[in-house]
Length: 115
Image (tube, rainbow, N blue to C red):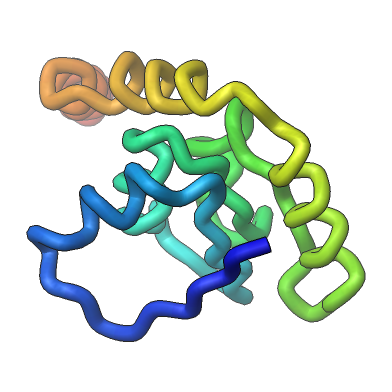
């Protein structure tokens, strides 16, 4: 098992790191979309995230969820993620669901409802 805890890393090095990683853990108490988790998942990393905030909307199909206040819950999520081999599916999901075109269409739909 090779676990790395990374502090600040320049943007240009992240893609390489994500490409080498099996999973990406961000079990926070409250998280917005979590761009680092989206970037990691786009590279095929299994996201390990908390179901707090709007994270479930984005990761329900691909993530392992855990309760951030529970070490046991985080441990189980890591164990589940370590058994998964669906990195290509995770990457494909992100690339198919989070495009600029889809973002524009969703924004336009909201604007239409407001007008």
